[in-house]
Length: 189
Image (cartoon, rainbow, N blue to C red; front, top):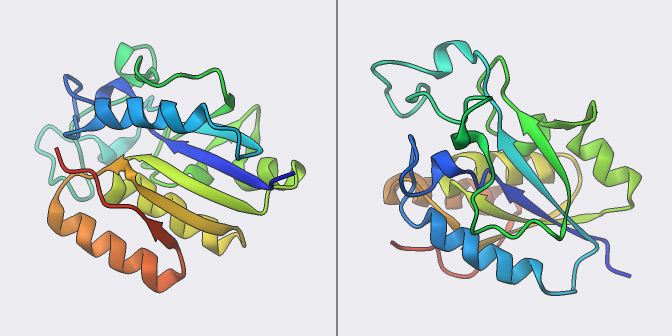
């Protein structure tokens, strides 16, 4: 039995084409992740969602796209929902993050009051494969926290979409330095 969990990070309507903070290739990545979730070589899969109510300075009328962003993934809007190209049958749980603050890492998220690290350990997960949106922000933060929490961590670059080439390159350097295994070629829209 494998001890691998797939972490599907923020594959939400607002982060895909047509959303308020769209990342080029988001819809295609959702479709590609669905194909990965139909394989049988992992123990379980979970998804994370940005789930904002009032995240303070994280939202801005004049965002800098580093620390502040246009409003996105607001609770009660269609933008917060997982993208329809993402097949959810294999997803065991959805973890929400960022209700009242910026939250980039899936390890800041909770499901039924339980944090992601604790939830994975309760299910004897020792390794994670991180996929989703965006390579240079939430995927990066989640993978770095996965390593910090003691999980053997892989990022499937072919199943991620990034915001900008320069920040993706910087993120990949950070991930490699932290001991994250990088597999595949980053998605290019």
